[in-house]
Amino acid sequence: MIIIMKAGSSDRQIEAVADKLKGMGMGAHVSRGIERTVIGAIGDEVRIDTEALEILPGVDSVVRVMKPYKIVSRISHPEDSVVDIRGVKLGGKQIQIIAGPCSVETQPQMDAAAAAVAAAGCRLMRGGAFKPRTSPYAFQGVGIQGLEMFRNAADKYKLPIVTELMDVRMLDTFLKHDVDVIQIGTRNMQNFDLLKEVGRIHKPVILKRGMAATISEWLMAAEYIAAGGNHNIIFCERGVRSFETYYRNMLDVTAIPVLKRETHLPVIVDPSHAGGKAWLVPALARAAVAAGADGLLIEVHPCPSEAWCDADQALNPQEIATLMGEMRDIARAIGREI
Ligand code: PEP
Ligand code: MN
Image (cartoon, protein in one colour):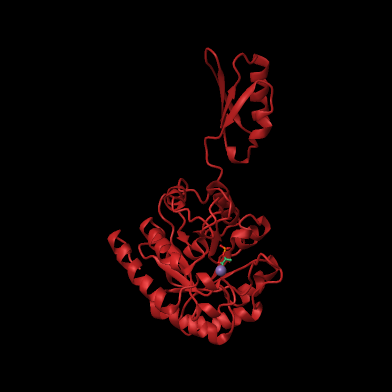
């Protein structure tokens, strides 16, 4: 951390900053220029509150040198991390497609969805038993029995399951049903108590980007999980709020290479909640693969027009099969595989 003093700051002010740093357990290296003095703070700056320094008399600005995130940062782990989901590797050469309905509805619906997902060649399945809905009067998910239906359907095809956890009180139930990947939804990206709890277990976690979160906030949210000891974290870009109303969310394709640079953890993309329309999903999915995503999370329903939730953005079994072929061609062109 570097503290830049105002032009004309006094020796007493400079000393006071150095003393404050020492009180914080940091060393201070003062270098006096002709006009300005800068003080280098030496030590672990992550725990230092810059505001406590900025407020001191004579201080012009405080600049962090280190990133505020440590464990998730690529600096701490230069190689790509691969998350192992019951033998399915996410983050390596192979791109993983996670497909399934927005929500678990009935056993026949889940059986048909699992059959379609497996037939298309996807290796993981998604489905929400607990749904975060904008309206309290909208369908909220079938709850615990949905986890059972999901397990039954997916186990027939040996597909690991991905499902959203909204409430810390449900964590034990998720573990009892041996949920393979816990999804933290966009609305909970900064639910820090939830993040701390999933940080204490070792199940892989998909951390969706908050709908108006900066990349730095998103990385810090992941750091909460990692700080608890769980490093099996997968970032999921699902589109951000923008001024545009034509589509549901604006897919931030730029975030893919940015995250791949900043973190060693896998990055996946959800083109369904970004586009919000089934016809937009293939184009966004292809763009995500081309931009370096390690996986995709795609809504697929055996009969989209009958879906209880997000009907207009679900692909049907034929559409996901076609899209898999298209994505496979793109993956091959960039030296990866699906
Ligand atoms: C979902 O994946 O079902 C979902 C609700 O997504 P998001 O949290 O991105 O809105
Ligand atoms: Mn949905």
